[in-house]
Amino acid sequence: MAAGPPDVERCGRPESAPPRSLSGSLGEVAALFLRLGMTAFGGPAAHIAMMRREVVERRRWFSDAEFLDLLGVANLLPGPSSTEMAIFLGYLRAGPLGLVVAGTLFIVPAMLMVLALAWAYVRYGTLPQAQSALYGVKPVIIAIVAQALWGLAGTAFRERWLALLAAAVAALYLFGWNVIALLVGAGAAAALARTGRGAVAAVPPLVGAAAAPAVPFSLAALFLTFLKIGAVTFGSGYVLLAFLRSDFVLRLRWLTDRQLIDAVAVGQFTPGPVFTTATFIGYLTGGLRGALAATLAIFLPGFVLVPLAYPLIPRIRRSPAAAAFLGGATAGALGLMAAVTWQLARAGIVNAVTAAIAVAAFGVLLRFRFNSAWLVAGGALVGAAVKVLGG
Image (tube, rainbow, N blue to C red; front, side, top):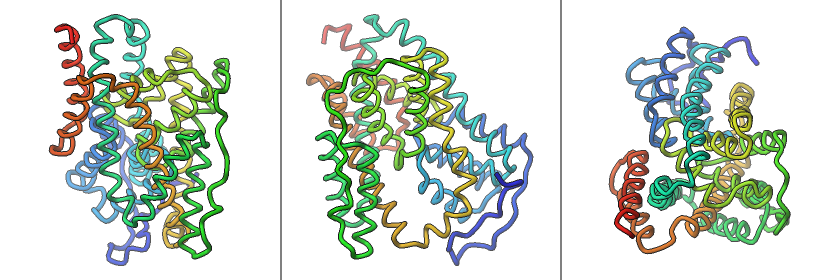
């Protein structure tokens, strides 16, 4: 790791201001990202909007052009984009220690809240009161993921054939193909198509094992699985669902689909990164040690990749083949996201009432700039009311 933060590079943007060296105190970085970690509800887009308000408008640490350059870099890396944005901002403001402090303080408040909710879920999750709340929460989570998919599609599918690529990835995933192979294959197909060399052979025929026996739990397997997920998950935090389901529901068989939806619900109801879903799953499968190991593993790649990748990104962005690969991988990620949303909907939408909750939540999200945490709370209240009234 470098001795200090690099200058903010322009990444090929001729209209941007010249690079300038940034420096600040570790204390101001710690104070800002601890507060954001405790209050940043609403998902990655909301987190990034809050960061911009703080570091561009209020504190003027960065210009808009600089902030957009950093956001572009974060979107090119695997892992949670809003957490990596926090890591970038801390790194460029206060050096390597700023990187660690900003990222850690953005994650830890959410991790502690999720840990408390996981404990309560394990202890009380089978009680009628908790089940009543989850009855209404699950269709809301499906709506939130579907709305995120809807919003991302407009940006990702600027060319029609990318939508077809995403559909092919979704279909192959439903037939049992390996998640990582599909993402790499989609990226390779796009790169080959862009360079005019054809793309038919780009998707490797790697198929996941069907009906594999359950794997005995081990802390090492938990850690390595989340480390892999943190290192290869491109796109929205909701693409994480495809990896979680592929590994923990299908391959390891440590979770059910219903438990996975509950884990995502907890991630939605708390501030900070959606990837703290890992904390919940870690606690369900391995107690406190499992929660800490899962959290460390899934976020560790971001702390390593940010300082390593930053100097290389401008070069990568100028490469047509690399840009096409990333576009294809993003399209593939959305295809995975669509397939998993459909699979989880079968577990969370079980009758006309839950279908109505999902449709209503989706409509609200499309029409209004609504904090998803309030929708989750509303779904819990509706679910409890329906159960009380005998629905």
